[in-house]
Amino acid sequence: MRFPTASVTCGEEACDEMARMAVMTKSVHLIDRLPEVRGRYSVAYDLSKVTWFRVGGPAEVLFRPADAEDLKVFLARKPADVSVTVIGVGSNLLVRDGGVRGVVVRLGRAFAEITVEGIEITAGAGALDLNVAKVALDAGLTDLEFLSGIPGTIGGALRMNAGAYGREVKDVLVEARVLDASGLEHNLTTDDLGFTYRRSSIPEDWIFVAARLKGRLGASTEIARRMREIQDARETTQPTRIATGGSTFKNPQGEAAWEAIDRAGCRGLRLGGAMVSEKHCNFLVNTGEATAADLEGLGEEVRRRVREVTGVSLEWEIRRIGVPGPRTGPGNGDG
Image (cartoon, rainbow, N blue to C red):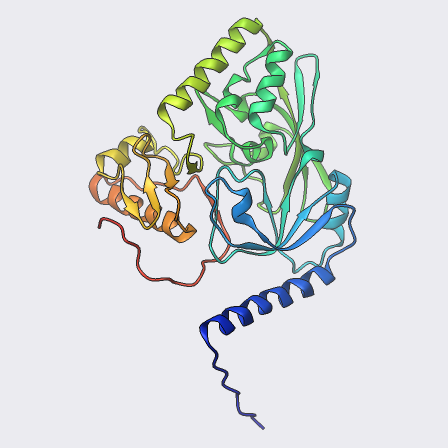
């Protein structure tokens, strides 16, 4: 026997409240299924607070593990159907307006330790790339200056084989410590990680927890000079004092992405509150009122125009996660 379906109508405010309660109910149900940990769970955590773009919806549950052992316990005991997404400081990340389902793991201070032994530096996945470069400077180790020009953490740098100013992570990595989806630990070399341009080959659900990097003994004055050059270059050429992310698109073979974007006439292009930076057109910026949909939509429009004008298919470098939010109408771009 088929029962009739009830029809419910409500005013805008009441419907918004019902939707919010539905999300919260789902989140509470999820958190009740998660294992006991020493770290902290947060329900419906606003991820726009922790991304450089300052946009995005909530994490269904945010988990900040107390340390690597706590993270192992969580991974080993969580229900198999619960998805896990790892984020760092949100520098190269676009969280969609509908938020992220499942558990978002954010690695905090316990994963930010940096130590030096001889010519090697061991850094937690939550350590800022810039801080690793500074520790290398203090230890008189060269070859790691390029990290001062990469926004974000070591974990993110490992995931995407980050690089800048002529060097990449693969050039200095000795070994990475990784947890697989079930919490088992693996120590992986550069060959194991299968690094290519802005990519590693390990599964998306494996989590970097630390890395050993190798430098060379050098003169601190020269190391400091090189780091100043890198910082000056960033300040001069990139939008560093506005809500933005890292490079939006990977460089296509034989050409810089910004040159293709410029040739397609996209410098300064707008969609809603999102804009292609006038200073460096491989950066998208939030002018103050952008949504994640504005930023992603603008990026796709840039890709369309570049493909149409130059024949080049740009590939996203910014990591995009989560589900879209409700449609709010067309953007107000310039075409």
